[in-house]
Length: 336
Image 1 (cartoon, rainbow, N blue to C red):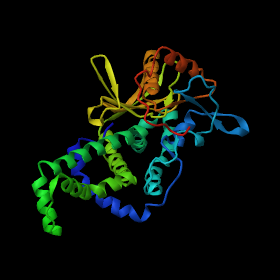
Image 2 (image 1 turned 135 degrees about the vertical axis):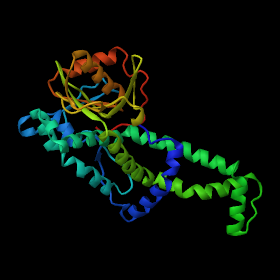
Image 3 (image 1 turned 90 degrees about the vertical axis):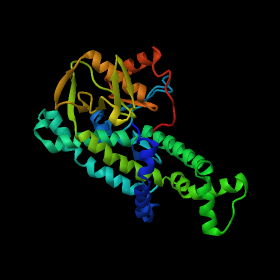
Image 4 (image 1 turned 90 degrees about the horizontal axis):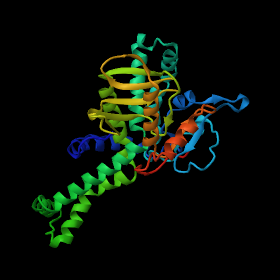
């Protein structure tokens, strides 16, 4: 997904700046090791091992030759410094939703979830959460910020250069001489925005802002739950995928408004599909299950999480041996 166009980014700038100032007193309150995948979700893919507790298998797609080792859900799907500004308050935002997930999950397992509007809303919000709380979203945020910053700086040095000269003269009485003085003035004007980007404040506020917008967009449509006819679903480290299907082709990580569906594995036996025309449960063919599992592998930053003794490792290795992920960009990865 993305955060909208550069024009939309600029339109929200004042609101973002105001929220940053609200959070500034909490700037240094951090949570180190933030889950980008909810532990409740990870636990649904885990298997109990007696006194050792729940375990799943993090499979490193970049180093498939390594023998994977089991880990607890607490150890998986974490990023050491996902948000670097007021991250404790952000964890509280996520926590308000995550405390509602267990009841919704039990309703899914019972098969009566669509009798409870509040549970359907929770599942839709869970999709929104995993769309924005991801390394893919963080990469998009960085790209758009740099694009907008470069455009604004260029405008100040060209089309708006006369206005910049007048503003500097009125403020300081200095006549800007030559391109170096103009560039220095432009950089000074933009410096607070660059600082808020570099210290993580802009990302912290925009992810909260985007989460709210994503929930609105996903709540307005239906929710479908897929159950596999055979086999089981796989969980990648970037599990929520906004996809667009057209002419037999599928693109993922598209903007929510451009998507034809948003998928999120919700355990080996369930997969959530947001932005559907209706609510309901459907059976996924073996071909559909394999297709969705390949998407999880393709979209992953580095890892997929396998239920122990499920046989899914064979599927993953086979896909990689056939050339899967050849064009995958690797821009960072969760810790485990």
